[in-house]
Image (tube, rainbow, N blue to C red; front, side, top):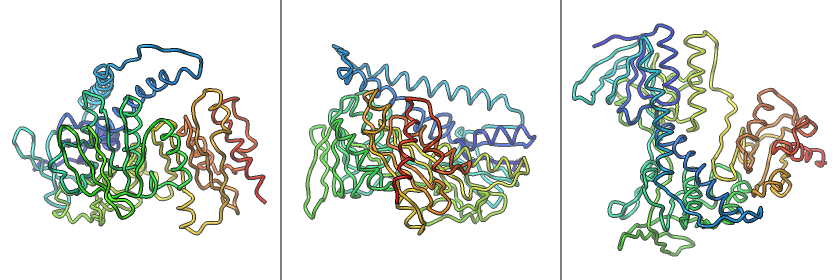
Length: 464
């Protein structure tokens, strides 16, 4: 058994900077990744980087298709999807090459390809890809093994061809008719992307609205905009069975007490993701999992086993790259900088890269009501976003929550061309404790999207 200072299982968005930081501090560190193909984690290989690259290409195509509203005529529009895919693959490859170089150049850091599992509280065994096994022990072990797409239990699923969010990235053709099961951010991003590439897209969602974690008015605003582009939605519907014939998949779903059928050439399953902790033999270390199989951690990201930490998606927190990176910051502060840091009370933003984007930070209205908070709700429709009128790009609802007593912002959701950036402006105000009314009177560049924050927060003065 080899003794080291730190073992890192996985190479995701927390593990990458953590491995380099620990090694740079003189810690003898081993980082284990299943294969070179997975180096960098889901975000780099099958998540943010490739999907947002393809989404950007789809946005360019949509802009050309709709150029007529600007008096611009484009003829013979065509898509070379192979070139689109090559661009995506090159961006991923270049990012991975940079990671390889930084990792290989680091002293005190060994990258091992293989499958890691626990054999004790402070020990793991790695089944290397060359068939060998090696045991390691360390006083500090960090789990960043991530998640994988959830495959729902549906009658006939083993008899039809389907794609998850990983598999659909490798398509060489544009689906003629794409059925998406799941109305969350993964299904919506892929759905709109392929719709803009030319697919007829239908989204089937069990719930009564898309984006179940959002307020209904925000979800409705975004759905209206996507429907205006030609996407179709079947809500409040449970998928009952799948069949395949003549290179098409038939989906049977129940709605209103009756069964209905819809047929497509391609099927995307986008019903969520599940923890990879089930492959780590956590029982051998006595590591506690929650009811969904995620690793339980405290505000310091430590599990119930001293010296064992879980970071990123696998600890059951919001599954976003920036959250994983902030997990790294918390560990770095506590372990190396001797700064007392915790995940408690973090203001967490996220952006869904549909077009327009959905940017959110802090609490939704539903969450604030569940907490019993005393707050104002303010909102403005997309038609009041001056920059959107000028660009000709449809905008959706802007909404914010303001605490009645302190006047501070509790949260916001922005359906806007740059919704993520606008939500970040609001986040900075929240981080700095800036009163909401300051955003009503503050000076923003004209005619930037952010200037409409004046319009949104001026709504506070209309409340009696």
